[in-house]
Length: 188
Image (cartoon, rainbow, N blue to C red):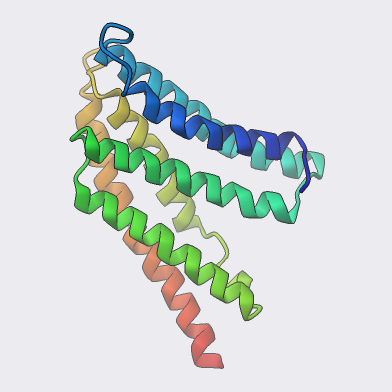
């Protein structure tokens, strides 16, 4: 295992996942619900920023590694899936929407693993639509975690709309990757 700053940031993101969840288990006397929302939202945003920053840093410093390439998407999926389950538990996200996103993540991860086994990893490499999907999720989730209005803006409502956009992009990207994989299968 390569221990470097980008990988350390990825590990830090994984460690933040239970912290985001734990915030909502604190008694109201310790942390009020609005403060729980703010702390969870802030932790999630920090984790999301490290997701971008660790990849940028690894490329910039020439510290890319096979382990980092494996760990980074695992951390992303753990972070998103844990947050979605939490949001369903809090009653802030529809379970069907969460299932679609989590199901897609599992399906595409399995597809990428299979494509790697047959030497066709490039055919299901991250695409622009996949990046749009991730961006929509990484903006919607903290808004749903924050929940309260901010400066007159209905943050929860905006986050709910963005979550629907994220689900539509999730389905679109899944179809995109599946079609690419089917093209490889047809070649064989």
